[in-house]
Length: 181
Image (cartoon, rainbow, N blue to C red; front, side, top):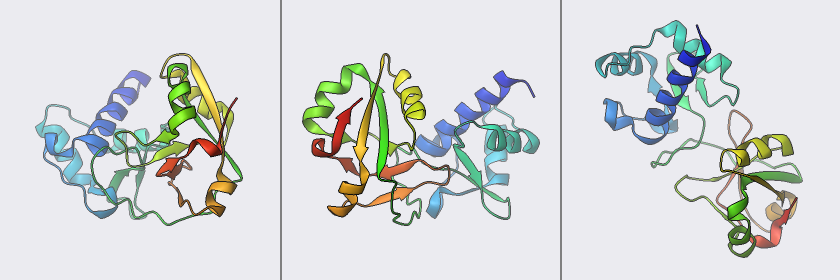
């Protein structure tokens, strides 16, 4: 399958598994799961036909591992990034000592004074390496990367989660735990 088709399917899945499942007539179950057969039927009914092989390729090839199948391969979900209320059934986890957050340079002053807020998402997204954070920041213009003292945050009672695709999630990062790179 060509790369542009993979990107189109990935964007379609992101929109409907993270933000607007009702637009194509699907409902997210606990954990954000949707039966694969229902998703494929909904895509077809909404004039965006997707074959099972294409869906499997998008899940396998997505560089950010945005989606996953359950162990039996009959359910699919977006791993994180939802703007609608969904319980992803994540377990609290001990983060690495240092994590990173990428954003656009125009947000630096606000973040230094107010911290990193989840905005329209359920969690603040943090990465384990500076390269990933820089790539995320570049999507918002000139990238800026913050170092997050995750060990201190956890010691002080903040709860972290790790999604299936190894994105670290937290409700809020107060300014005291941040350093701009």
